[in-house]
Length: 263
Image (cartoon, one colour):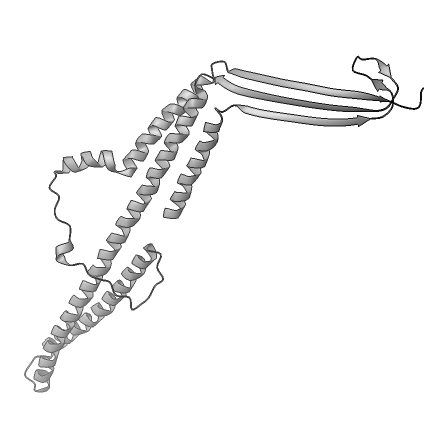
């Protein structure tokens, strides 16, 4: 997802570049050379007999957009804003991926804690089962109480199996989000309590106000609104006449070489 968003941001930048070049003047040139044989005309337009005629011409032209109701400029600004919005989208995807991985990391740690708790419960019920088993063998406990504790111990064993599957699934999800090859025996490093984030000193309203000015998601939406406004302005500009400055230069040369024959 991050790579796809980065590619989209680069695509927006590429769309922006040709628009800027549209304001630059255009320049074209042509050159030609020709040879003809037989009757032709000289430089004064008189028909003459010639063995061959050489001709050469050069032309150049240039065009510059002077005005089109600011349509081109607003279109450039629109694509520039979309490019900026694309970069904000790219940052937003990276932020979302970061939060997803953090959440999956703590989910995996919680699953490990649940497994450790299930094992402690299993050991505790095993001790109780060993005690009542001895009492049952001596006939000092009611069978119903014995089988109740034994069933509870079996449930604790099942809880361990379920907790192990939960840990495995949590690790798979975490490594998948990180695009890392799965290893069953992978160990997660646990953060120290001293490195845990402290509580926010700001109020909820202050945090919300900060988010409106800093979150890429909000910035991207704001930039797209501004881009839409420029799109409307560019479309409106097309209602006005277009003023263009054009220039053209052309020159040619021809010579007739008399031949040794006449018609």
